[in-house]
Amino acid sequence: MFSDTLTYPDAQQRSWRIAGLTFLAMLFVMAQTLIAQARPDSFAELAEDISPAVVNITTSTVVAGRTGGPQGIVPEGSPFEDFFREFQDRQGNEGDQPRRTSALGSGFVISADGFVVTNNHVIEGADEILIEFFEGGELPAKVIGTDKNTDIALLKVESDEPLDFVKFGNSDTARVGDWVMAMGNPLGQGFSVSAGIVSQRGRSLSGAYDDYIQTDAAINRGNSGGPLFNMDGDVIGVNTAILSPNGGSIGIGFSMASNVVTKVVDQLKEFGETRRGWLGVRIQDVTEDMVDAVDGLKSAAGAMVTDVPEGPALEGGVLSGDVILSFDGQAVKDVRGLVRTVGNTNVGKTVDMVVLREGGEVTLQITLGRREEAEGAVPASQPAPSSEPVEKEILGLTVTELTDEMREELGVSEGTDGLVVSNVDELSKAYEKGLRAGDVLTEAGQQKLTSIADLEDRITEATEAGRKSLLLLVRRAGEPRFVALNIEE
Image (cartoon, rainbow, N blue to C red):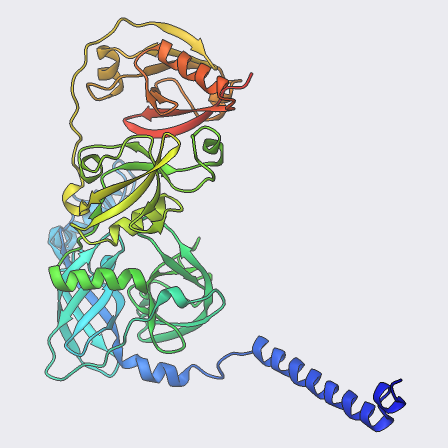
C-alpha cells in the first residue's frame, strides 16, 4: 500500500509545482508574443550598408521631330489646327527637328569591376546611358546584353576604383510575410528606400519565364530595375512592375525573382545573350475533365502535347497526345512549370522525359535545342489527296470531312487530315466546351481522324470502355488544343 506522502504531495510541493508551471506558461506566452510581433526596430543600418551599390540610371534617346504642321498635336480639322500651325511657324519649325529625350530608372552593382543589373525597358533604345552613384559621381555605361523575356539587362561601367556591390540571395527561401526593402529612384526624386513584406510568391504577369515576388513595399515609376532586399542585405528580386489604376503605388508591386535573374545574368555575362533549352512541342495544361478521357491518367497534372513540329521532341519520339509527366527527373505540374524547367536546362543536354502514352509510361531521351534559334520556325508537312465533302451531326457538332479547298480557306497546313465543324448546337455540351464553327478536329481518343466514320468509331470505343468523355484535338487558326467532350446522353 502506497504511503500518503507518495500519493499526495504536501502543500509546499504542490505550491512549488504550481509556481513552476505558471512560470513556464508565462515564458511560453511571452515567447509567442515576441515571435508574433518580431520586426526590425529600424532599417537604417541595412540601408546604410547597401545604399552605395544602388544606382540611378539616366538614359537619353534621339527621337525624330514632328512633320506635317500640327498633326499629332490636334486632330485634323480641329478648330485649333490653325492656332497650332501659327505657333509652330513662329517657333521656326523647331518642332520638326530631331530632339533628345531622357528617362530615369534604377539599378544595382553586382561586382567590384562594374557590372550593373537593371530592367531591359529602362535602357531599351537608349543612345546614351549614365550611371549615378549614391555617394556621388557618374559613369557612362555600355550594354552587355538584354533579355526581353524576363525584362533584364546587364550593363558595364569602367571605374578606376573597385565599386561597392551587392550579392544575390536565394529567392526560393523567401516566405510570404517576410520583411523586404526596395531601393531606387522613384519618380526621379533620387535615392529612396521603402519597406514592406513579401505578399505572395510565384506570380506570373505575361511571360513564359515569369516568377515574380509580389510585395507591398512602395514601388513607383523610376523604381524599375532597382533591387528588392531581404533582411540579410541580399538581392532576392529586381523591381519590375506595379499594378495600379492610376500609375502610382497602391501596394501591389512585382519583382523578378533572383533565381531567375541570376541565370539570365550569367548567360548575358558569358555570351552577351540568353541560351535557353528548347523542347519543340506545343502543349497545354491537363484539366480535370481529361482525367477520365485519357488511359492511365490519374490526376490533372502534367502537360499534354498538342503538336510536335520538327525539332528535338520529334527526333526524340514524342507524339501528339502524349502527356509529359516528368522532365530531367522533375515532376511536371503544369505547362508553366515545364516551360521554365526546359528553359533553364543547358542547350545540347540530353535528358530523360517520361510521358504517358496509351495507358503506360514511356521514357524518352531528348537532346535539347536552343529556343532563340528555333523561334519562328515553321513545321514542314506533306500533301495528301483531297476527299469529297460528307456532312453529319454528332454530339451537337455538324462535321464535314476536310478538303483541299477548306484547308486553304481555314489556313490549315497541307497534309492535315480531320473534320471541319460547320455548325454547333448552342444547347450542346460541345458549345459549352467552346467548340465553334470553323474548328478542325484532327484527333479523337488520341487517334488520327480522316473521316466521319473514324469519329463514330472512337465514340463507340469510348462508350464500350465505360468512359464519360472523349478527348478531341481541336485546331483553331492553326493553334491546337485538347477538349474533353462529354459523350453521355
